[in-house]
Length: 323
Ligand code: CP
Image (cartoon, rainbow, N blue to C red; front, side):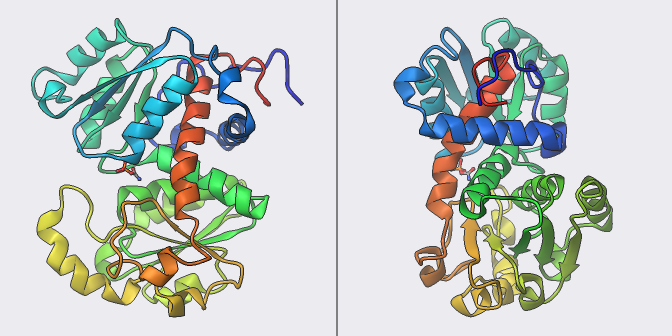
């Protein structure tokens, strides 16, 4: 049912990492995303008419850049892309000055950057919503798209089990786990000690899951982590900016490659997820990522729908949306 005067619970907020959103707010974004996914884009053209999203990218991107730009176009708005040295958050001028200036031109700002701290300073000074399009510690937009994908496959979120195998310290692992815990999905990490989440982070996850009963545990055995999982998730072994560690990571993480044999330890109905880009025959075997259990291209598509929902939630009062 479409509400006529919904609460504008997210309007004007920043989203730098998943815990900036409550479980209820995540549910709203997922429901709006599902609604936008089945609505004709010709009916969406007034939702963000006249609005501009500034996109500042200091790292390469295919999915994040294109899905946000297309999303703004479909919603009747405009996206302005700047990369490399055009806007270096925190080097050419202070993050605060850049944020104050940009807030006078655009209606929201998407930042893909390296360190998280300049992004926090940037958002503290911005007077329009700031969205993290990936930083060293978080990738909240990916996590929202992933929840939409899991919900589509299982028709529910609470009570499911997700196994994250490989580099369990990276930004995607952190955001996916935080989002999972908030909505009631238990998380098992399968990783070597070198790539294990810190005890402090595991404790934070436990507190995010306190309301739902979801649990977060780390195992050194990939098979143990994956046992009975509904979702098996992995990501590249070496994150952007850490290329000097690639050789070491390849050796250490080899036992954590997602193969058909590892998938057979998960639930029969389990899906395979990866945020992409992927390296076949490194973190995942080709027959898994290209096989029937793979949900990776639904994930990639859902970046578009989840981010459109997030933009509508941050920039409107959600009138007419299913909240
Ligand atoms: N998953 C993801 O963020 O993809 P891009 O790096 O291509 O944006």
